[in-house]
Image (cartoon, rainbow, N blue to C red; front, side, top):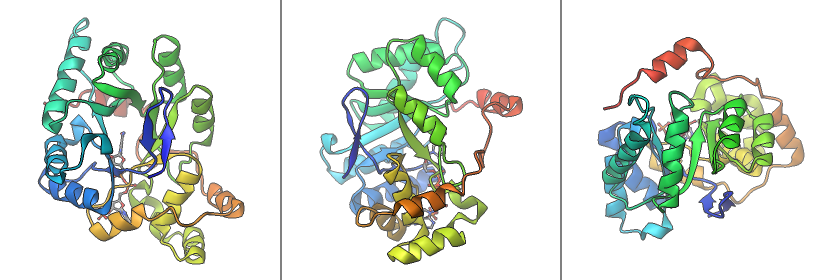
Length: 285
Ligand SMILES: NC(=O)c1ccc[n+]([C@@H]2O[C@H](COP(=O)([O-])OP(=O)(O)OC[C@H]3O[C@@H](n4cnc5c(N)ncnc54)[C@H](OP(=O)(O)O)[C@@H]3O)[C@@H](O)[C@H]2O)c1
């Protein structure tokens, strides 16, 4: 599997499997099928409420731990001031226990909300203690990311952000590259919004390569050095989404896809006060 090298030297597979919105009772089977298909990089989160099922699938696979790259995420901590660091470590321990692991490969702050500076300080210690091989963030706009970098010791290895043909994040990626932060796409297919799978421009390019639109989108992201974690519960699509290393999009095809960018989210705005408040008040346990 092709990898990217993170800012601390850790190798991260450029393609993985995401498990957001897979119901807990279906997750174990889906992850077992994904591991069977050849995925070695899994992306979950405490807030997806399916870490235990991911852990069972890992255990049943019999794969060696060092063959796998496992990411999970910290949900917003609601502890009173002063105890967020302790609560972050407790939340991490709970994720490890649910996953049945001794360490994770990547631990992310899920949202740039609440006291995430205290969360980050606890995560720096988790990293220094060898419990998270790399630490990073998710959903951070550049201003929040740069502020976090400038006031802490460890530069986040990754920022996992909404990235797909309709919200391409080229400027974000350029600045993140300058700061040593790897971009990772969530929602590479925009969850099918905006008729992604039937967009004529994407279908034409797919036909030219004898590939599907999904494969073209993943290939386009990978050629931009964006880490991708597509989700599917269907084994045939899992296999299809992995099979993107035997063709190359031309510069002209890359530029045609670039023209689909709207520069805006299709999901939510982390600067919308109503959304900030809704996310910030969500309790997961
Ligand atoms: N950090 C964050 O805040 C955040 C937010 C969202 C997502 N994520 C992560 O990113 C991962 C991926 O994003 P996502 O799950 O939101 O959406 P996505 O991967 O963009 O889209 C998933 C959708 O595409 C369909 N699909 C998958 N492969 C396909 C193919 N080859 N052909 C046609 N349809 C296909 C799936 O249907 P079927 O399952 O029926 O095949 C599902 O409806 C998540 O699972 C999660 O790990 C993170």
